[in-house]
Image (cartoon, rainbow, N blue to C red; front, side):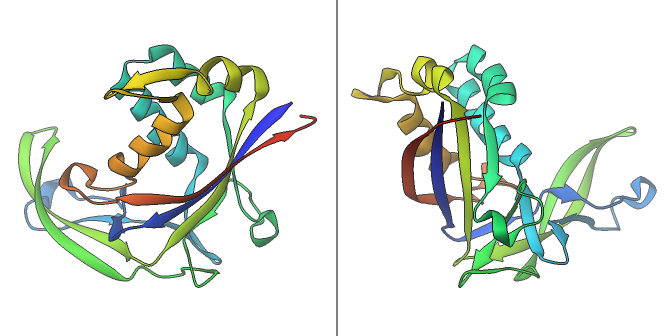
Length: 200
C-alpha cells in the first residue's frame, strides 16, 4: 500500500536556473557563467532529483539524518498528468495549463567562485521563469515508511504537526533551484491531497 501526495507548487516571484553551461575558466572574469534550465521539445522541466534534493535539505535542517537516506531510496516522484509527459520523471513548468517552452528573461548577477587557481569574481547569467508558473507532481511513499516517519507528530516552534506538514511548510521557505540564499525560488504549495493506493 502507498500514500500518494498530489502537489501543485506555485512560483511566487521567480525561479532561477542552476544548471551550468560549459565554462571557460581561463577567462572567468570576462566571460559570464551561464546557468540554464533543463528542457526538451516539450518545455522547461525539473526532475525527481530536484524535489528529493529539496526534501533531503529540509531533513538536514531539522537534524533528521536517517530521513535523508529514506527520501533517497524510499520516496518516489512523478509528474502530473502522466499523459502530458513521455517521461513521468520530467516535471514541467506550466502556465495556463501549458508547458513553458522558453525562459521569461535572463538575470545578470555578480558572484565569487572557487576555481583551481583560487577564488575568482564572475558574472552569472541565469535564465529565469517568473510568476505565474506552476509545477504539478505526485510524491509516492510506501505506507510503512509514511506511517513511521512522515505521519509522525513532532513539535516545531510550539506547534504540534506531522513531519509531512512540516516538510510542506519548510519547502515554501527554502524554495527551489538557483540563488535560494538570496531569496530566489520561493514557492507556494497550493494543493495537497493524501490518498491511499493499493498495489506497488
